[in-house]
Amino acid sequence: MNPYIAFLLYLVAILAFVGLTLGLNRLLGPKPVNNAIKLEAFESGVMPNERINVKGVSIKYYGVAILFILFDLETMFLFIWALGAKPMTGFLLFTFFLFLFLLVLSLLYVFKARLLEAVTE
Image (tube, rainbow, N blue to C red):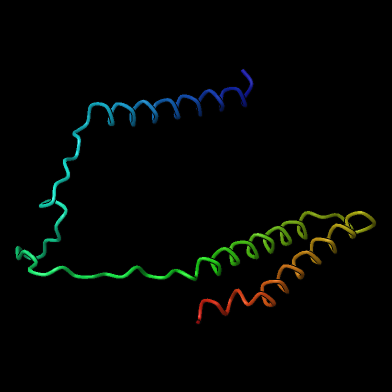
């Protein structure tokens, strides 16, 4: 048997087992009952006597996280390419500089749009 077919059969068997287990758990497992008393905050056996007003937390840093992942992945691709590339001539050199140009262009856009400064405001 081809090793790829064996691996695919193994993967399908694992996914089927996980799906069957999750499905049976959902069908046969206990159903949670939500009521006002169970949803009430409880600490150290003392019931709260006043409602605490909690405001939502602003998460402006999500843009920084996305930018970090974007530039980190681009840097990883450059390192992998530098390790695996043969002597750079012609088309390889053109695509390398095109990739670097797009990387620098996106970095300039980030600074021009002041995306990193929005977090500190």
